[in-house]
Image 1 (cartoon, rainbow, N blue to C red):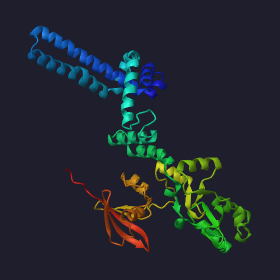
Image 2: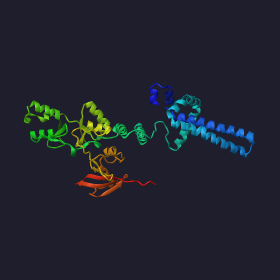
Image 3: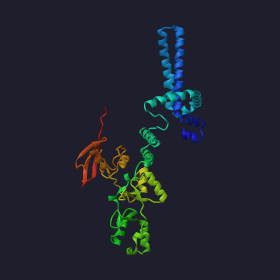
Image 4: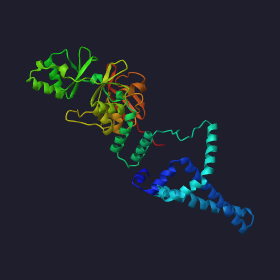
Length: 391
């Protein structure tokens, strides 16, 4: 209706005018519906009484006849037509309903006050601002519904849901953990540092002195190559700290939408994630945030292995550090990610322990078997969907 109205459709504008106050519209429809049905039943009863006399037979015939007529022509037929063509039917009846709403407005207002008063006695809030779902949740529900009906494909659903989730996901949920970050130690020999930078598949590398938490800059591959050219290929003539860029730090509780806005304002593509004590937790890039919307973006340096390996028996061998969001997106699953970010974290949270190799858990409709473990870190899990019997 909003699309039709924006295109200049006057009938759609009438529909939107009516549904802005849905409580008043619903009250007018129900009032008119009951008024007509009761009036028609009373008139039919009077007619049959005049024909058959004031007997039980006349009442029975009137009841049966009006039940059939009301059920078919006042209930089933119009509602079936409305379900089949909701937009067209709404625009067809909107002009009439506008006058019905206006005529019944005083009565419906009194009914609204009575209903709200009764609900208030039971502690129920039915005001316009008491919606259970946010607009984003309603959109997610609509997209999931259309996807289940085959009207929206999985890629389009993931794209829209990814954009809606930016306000709810924190960067700590998608960041590269500090143990997986490639860093350069300025205390190492200059030539070794440059060799490590050139061998890396990343274009931005953090620089630290002595302690990995002591980040002093971010080295960009383009700046390094330009400096090597200016130094005639002599690495000892390059001041890596001088050509590095000022590191940009972001709190771990920042949402993806906030971080995306910050990247655009600061014209940055790379942020180091810190906790409340200032310790390095990981890093997040602009590409990481975009991948939450459009899915995995692979370039010529990305590894083809994403940590999810389908098996012939229908199970998956999954690395422990694979995020639940990525697994859900890839397999169209609904594993919860409220209490844990990674698959390993989910197993630990549900099992309430650090499991041993070979230990098996069953929860959320899946069976999790521990394949590998390094010290207290789960590195590989076999996940098998559990078939639920149809009752």
